Length: 527
Image (cartoon, rainbow, N blue to C red; front, top):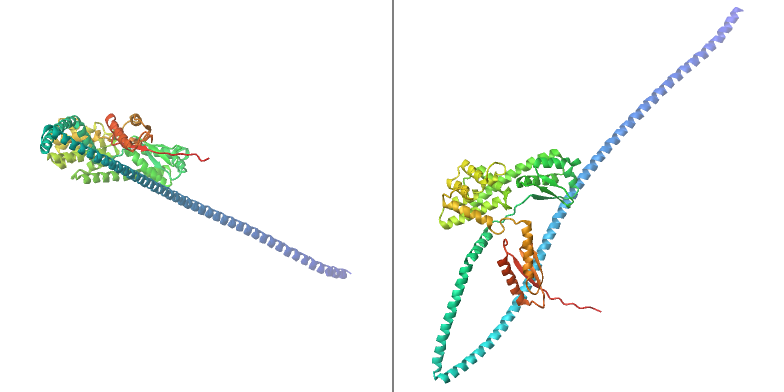
């Protein structure tokens, strides 16, 4: 019985164990599969995350490249637009110049047509006068013949004797008249000789003098567009402050379109500032570091320009063996003014005048030219050193071993020292002539305006004048006259009368052109 029980239990336990083994194996297998699935899912999740990160990085790189490309395109576009604006400005200037030339040509043609009309009118007038004179001559001949016949009958003289008597009388009368006329002309010449001689000398000097244009305290820098003003000012004004500190020149940025103004009393520093600002605008990068770099570069460039200008000056004048430092100082005189007159141009003018006068008087021309050129050399340094320009000029001349005659000319050209040689007298005379000639030194604004007002008032004082306008900075006055009151002949006389009155009553630099305009207008109404 126990055996049967054992066999039954054994028979039952074997399947049960088998089933349990199967169940355990299944559970274990499913557990491994689950872990494998979880691991695969984890790997898939990590791969997905890594792929997303790679995608994000690639998108960020692409975005950066797009931004970089856009910036590059924007810069190229701005550069292209700047060049186009510059080209447009140049084209506009050329168009204006062409238009001005066309207007000048048109005006010249109008003047030619007017002159032709005047010539025709004059020719007609001459013809009329010629006919009138011929008629008068015939009348005089007839009366003369009649008078001869009467005299012959009354006096009993022959015709030849009467003619000889009349001839002698006419010759004596003519001699007396000519003598009186010559005396009057000589008296008048004596009265006006001094004035006319001065005017001739001043006119000759003015025609041969060098042209000059002296800056006062302002320089204008043109801008390609008004947007650049913001870069010049910078954030909270840091760029403009850096520029003013580096150059010592005030920058005025106002509402004036397409321009900024540089203000300063020193033309040398103002030239550096203008050159530097133009370079900054052209470069487009405006910041404190760049400003200092460009200003230093502009200083070096200006020093080279000054040296070249000095060399060109001494070469043009034929002055040799000058110390290189003196040559630099001569070039620096271009950035020094005296009463609005450019000192370098004044010195060149004095040198030429001294050379001309020395040649006429048989003095050393080269030494005279050298003295005239160096007489104001002290003005190149008097703004930075103590002493007058005469004292500093003497020191420089002695330092660089100039001739004693030149040193005396520098010392005596303002009568601060006795004249030791005639060349010093020539330098003094040339300095006075160059400084006082018409147009050499500037008028004040008030005197300038008063002169223009007086110029117009002189023309308005004549009958038939309706309006007068002073133009070309007072170098020309245009007078409008009534057509009915003033004819062509009277217009010519009126222009001459006005010019003579201006010459006698006013003081002015250069010449003043008087233009009388006589215009005929016809009007009608269409009904």
